[in-house]
Length: 151
Image: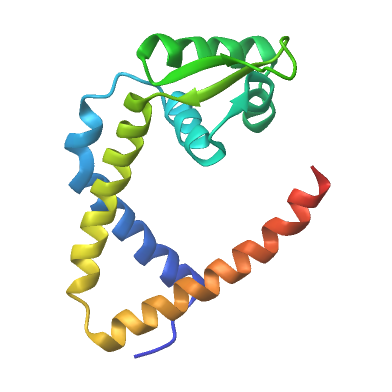
């Protein structure tokens, strides 16, 4: 067995990703939200609370477009608005129970498939995969630090 190349690793990643999308398609089929709305929901899961301005900043869109995005998520029942007690001009956004449930359902579906597939690996292959993901996570976290420090 060879060490492989970046291209070979990316091809394997794409195959796993495609299999994951196929396996979880039934969970996604019922959703009536755009990809940008879904990304905003995931962002709010990570940030817990964000302003409309933060959404605009992270998506590289203007404030009115971010406000429309937030409005659609509020109407869909995935996000709720709160007044910022420190600054009444700011509106804070956070996930509702339905938003949290959606993220959890989508993520857990993916994780359960990955867990099942990984449990079928030999101990040696699982150890190699773990080493590889840890190494990639280390590189990715070091790459992100300079970008975050500029923000």
